[in-house]
Length: 583
Image 1 (tube, rainbow, N blue to C red):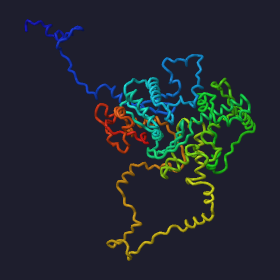
Image 2: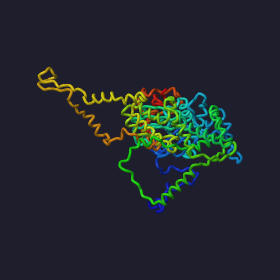
Image 3: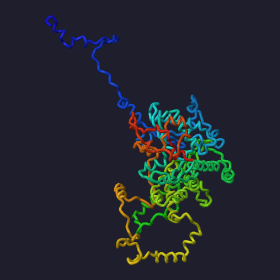
Image 4: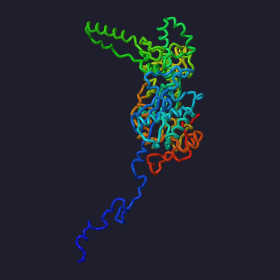
């Protein structure tokens, strides 16, 4: 120890602390032992990928996308002919380019390029539907969601009456192009009451191809009726209105004689895009002439406000001037053979809505079951519901769809239905014979006499008679009250005792089907139809079982593996399409 220099005993002079230069393999120095990283406690990126559930709402003309938990969709992609351009086709950016819409409208295909699918699938290319779904979703993911190509769970909001071939085309496109592990299906008619904060509702979907009225009771679809009157019919009626006024301005009033002949062979003189824009921005609905009958009269005399004479005269003169200015609307039409500025009366812009949705010039007996006006369709849908379901649904009417945005349409439908309920009641039988039967004085006297007499009650037996007597105690079974059930008492404690609004017509607002589906998914509520990718690619739609053959409790169990807390175990071989697989 005496021969060792003091500097050798210092720690910083130890050989083990000397680092080797880069590129030279280090010796057996002290190092931290490697620790195995468990996948469930690894990087949070895997957990975040499990939480990124994409909500997709498919419509006839648009697709809305976003993440679960968001209050509104991140973006909307509309379908149109520009999505069918080939790669490298930049003609639309040329200054002198004008699209040939007349060539696309030939053969009755006016506006078909603006739709994803048609109700009639007999002459429809299902492969083209899948390709358009892929292109729309890729554009939405790139522009609005800003996500990579990592597989994510998807929830599709689709109408439950969608044909199985179209459903197969959509699911094939999702599973083969985007590789999601699972795809869940939700119905928009069930998501809308969830977004409105109610459990039961009457959903009136003023869609593009048709209007569907669905009764939802406790999140279940109990009844559905439909009519062919929808947004497409409104757009066609708008085109006919503009075409008639164009022909009158070009050839004079003589052209009105040939209007009936032109109805048989429809010739389009304006583009679909221009007519659709006019129908969504300018078309309005007239108020009902029967709305004054249904509104209750105010008690007492109306309040009269005092004004000076010169103020009234000024107000009347300004009102008449504004009415004269608003009486005529100038519409610039660029898609005609030559651009024209058309001047239309403002009242004429209400004719397409009147013809497409009501047809008040015809009687109710002249319509088929699939072409009823909207107020008759809604009234008959309420009549076909059970009594307890009707009392709840009539107080929770939800209007949705693109046609519901027409100015004054919802109020007109509500007033017409209120008038029908006020005049007919809830009796499905009506007519002159029924009115005469109700106003017959003889039947009224007979009914009043029976009501005054009342029902004859049973006389109680005496104790001495041969009645139900046990151990000297008389047991009156007819007047004995029900025994208290402890289970029902416990259930009543957890029920909401606030009075519910029932038995009166009332319309409520909803934030939309997409927002309802986002809320359902964010709350981890299991969907009825959850499809696994491997099972779908192996079996297709033919491998689905009936809803009654699938154990819903087993499919909702959660595993404790990696990411199992966020998704249920979907490895079961039994799966179902739910209401979408019903034939």
